[in-house]
Length: 279
Image (cartoon, rainbow, N blue to C red):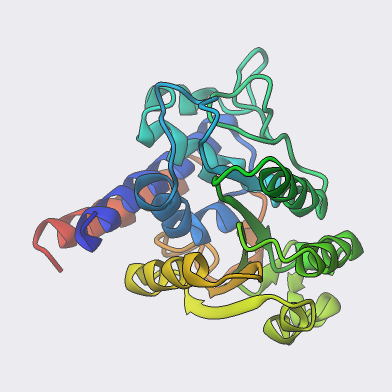
């Protein structure tokens, strides 16, 4: 898909995120918005998937390890055709299949339930190992938060993946620099992130997580690399696309009120207008 089309899709994903969290009056917009470009690339270009057959045996797998950013995953799934975009407004509502964290039993397209930070990458490593043992050619992708990698379980999983040469695994770290309590470097610095993954025998790539050329090149590099799992460390802007949410830790887990929602949607409409002009 052309980059301009991906940018347009990503903006639709961002609209879905803001709309869902506003309707729920709760949720996590900041980290959903920072990862929206990666969600878009994975579901519209990278992964071998079929929305009409979500359980297709040979599909690529995705695990949202930072499960609280479910609004971003749900919006990507909806825009890709797994379920109606209109259903995003049922986020966190009683009886909805779109709960605050992903549920593999209820939500089409969700490969793993997640939410307890640190555990998603372990599930993804298990899926990748299963693929190797069963001689399957599917690939496994997992998205972690940079605050999440303060969890020790992340590094146990990384150690195992590197030791077992799981080159069908891509670990993506959304390095937006902020977590619920503030800057990650102030809370419990995980830096240097790249060197840590290198120490566990990973092929490590640093990118701008809002640049589709860099995302595409990183994914191609990951597929070409044999004998090592890949870690993509993507530098992003928390709250990307919404003026008052950008680079603000306060929007980690807070819903916009009606006035803020209108401002956010106006910001995204302005981006739409620029994209239609081909900018």
